[in-house]
Length: 77
Image 1: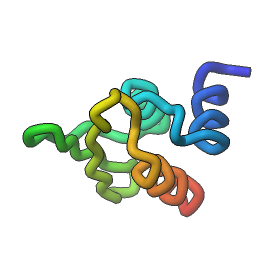
Image 2: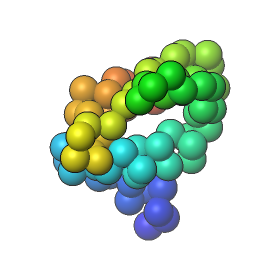
Image 3: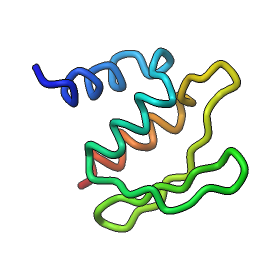
Image 4: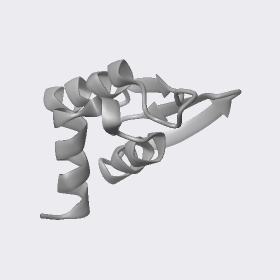
């Protein structure tokens, strides 16, 4: 199993345990492009042009609802 597959599985099975850094790595590995940052908000775009604004929680983890939005976007593509 590749690192991407492990991260993808972790995102699907326990999004509450995904660190923000892991989330950004998964976005990058999935072909998403970092567009810009304003404050703590970072804007990522999918290969099909969908936008996803994300920001870390105070504990350094990814926000669950944002991980779920990403998964939904990936399943639609």
